[in-house]
Length: 446
Image (cartoon, rainbow, N blue to C red; front, side, top):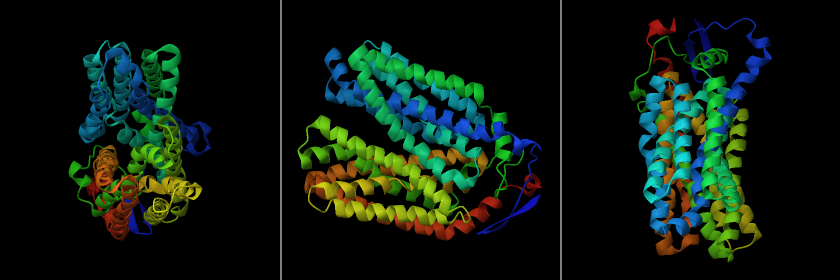
């Protein structure tokens, strides 16, 4: 047993023996990045399979004479399954094995996407999309838990931000590539291409990643406030009894509120305020979507740098990103149309999801490794309910009464609540670390 000192105090942790030749092995140093690359690739495949449907809406509407409500139901069924199943499937993956769970998820959503390519009518397509949602439900939370397990906490914010940004990039790729393939080869090949990519990546992941290798590389990341004892599993209730973790959940969800608003409403804002045709407005809005995703990655990297010596500074970084976005978006939507407005909104969009990486890193740092996927699944659920679902809906209701621009001007005020949650989280962070360190029975940490 060794003592580990942080800015929050001194903690005991179990010493896990590491082979003497490990530090000198380039292959061992590269392995965590290989895990990240494969997991990130599967994340892209996840969102490409989910969003390719949008690219083929016109083809399906013509081929099967579908109504708009039927078309949108093919999208909504995936989101519904993700919302319902994220937490229970994350808990199951913590118990059953994360690697096996990830491979099964990828095979399921890829096979279901292939069924979409073979569908002959609306009913079959709806059933296939249901299975896509089941397969994709917990991938984000379990995938990032696997990635973070083989990296030291000093880079967790950047990795979390990159993983969350993968959703934006995968969505853009799915719609873009899906549209091109549909025009040249037919809409069925759009689904087939995404399915084949997912199956290939699932096979590679299964061949390269194993629970044993993950455990070995997790032991090489140096001391942490707590290491999992042999056979010890923290109670699921610990996901909700640490005040600092609860603050991270709420702060993350409220900061993603405005990012979700931008993703949903920027095409309409550009169309109405700048008079661009829907296709051109969508292309301009795609730039803002990419800014949001890029910001998540870069803000995560910045956070890891400023929090290198003191992890508590990651809370402060998250607050700064929220404040910048609040200021730029508030001013941007408050002034008239023109280049200055677009620049300010662009800066605000860049920082709008910047706190995602820091808050995910805090959740990972404050929860026991045996329930980390479950914790990140809870974070995903909070982001979905309070941010991704609530944000666009609230702005839509406000837009009906005040107009879209006025509603978008109000939306960034959600950052005030996010800032309050993050400030409280930073205040109780030392106590949260102490609660985590005292979690395991003494017999498992000696």
